[in-house]
Image (cartoon, rainbow, N blue to C red; front, side, top):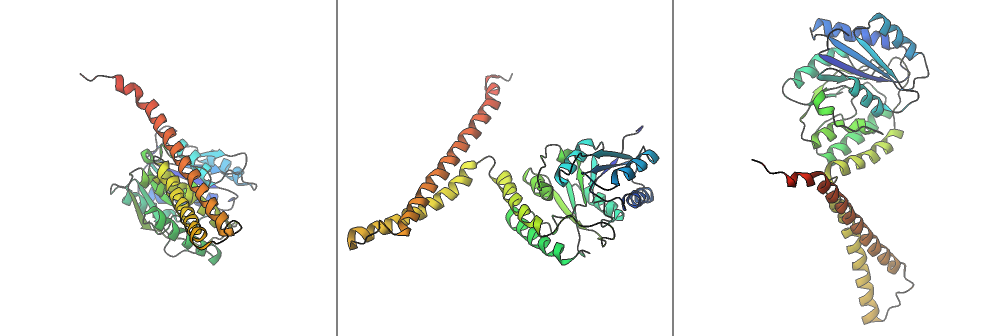
Length: 315
């Protein structure tokens, strides 16, 4: 392209052949109407098995200055697709949206306006979501759990309609289902997060790729995010906390049984509670030891990175 774009729109997709042409037309019209400047659309075909790639090729040939495209050999997931799109984006402002026409391109100016207030990430909030209960109910559970555990006060973490400053995305390592937690990961690094309500349309083409089955995966990834954002630099607190809890419970059980044995002559050798106490005590020791090993690894890696600095002398 002859000129660098002022806006990059990253669109991951899988089997969305019926919506791509209309999506381009709506985005182009919105950009022109609102004078948003030069833009680029980056399609990431995440292993589509329909004719999505053929549609993208036709659009690219027709609009080579505005459309770029990547194609995965198989389905790697939305996080991988977004990571690839972020790497390819050339603008300092990046907007992400889905390709199913449920996100309304007319909301792009609102996202950018909020971003211009000084925020690093602006997330869309689908207040009136036009999806079946099988999608909205798991999403509500997920959003509540994420707010409660992360401290990031967004209503709709699941919304793929977001605007970012490219500088905030440079060091993100996305995999699995971590795309849902980009605001949490950014907030943990000190970036500012905001939210604006956006319109949401009912799906008219294709089928949804999400539902109840994603809730379990999302819960596991939420645990990963909490560890990465809160305990990455202090693994001893994470493992040690559970270790102290387990060890204290085991010690209390064994102490009570010992008193029962010494003062009341009870037979404790065959009691299940006796074996539970031993198990909890051993588990506590193992968890605390794991935390200490993690602290040693963390400290050693930090020492190796900062060692040469100690030999410098400032004049």
